Length: 214
Image (tube, rainbow, N blue to C red; front, side):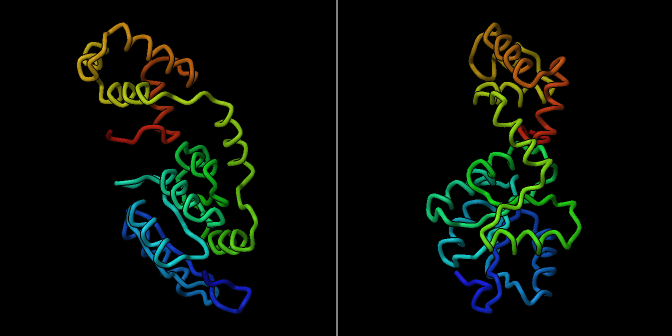
């Protein structure tokens, strides 16, 4: 790894599946002599490969990506290098994927809608060994850790329900009984504290538990 302590710029890897956003961050950092973008990746698997090859000082990690998502990528990189410094790039404070990434070891959390000046501050802070997580995100993380997560099948059920399908259709698609689907839906409504199916889908989309258009 490089490092600012020996007057070298902080080596940064930018990971995002949207080239325009990735290029925008790269352009901002490239205009600041404190940083050098030494690697880019468009999905989690590429991020792991680039991390092993380039060993960036700080990695900026998007959450919603193909092949391998953000939380999985953060966990994998931290297994390779427990001291890896990773900052989550998220769309909202309560994004479940981003909260999972923080729980997996990410040291920073930056909203994509934040002022441009926030990103350099976060990179420098995390590079210096500090944790850069806004108070509202810390509160959301605490709430997330206290909330019972959906099981894999409950998530599958909710994804299909989000497509407007009935319990009977969900049962047929998953190869389970309609009564099991109903039981799963009751559990989902309880865990998400949702009023009904539609409310559960809205909550899950807002928290990043399921993807839009799934």
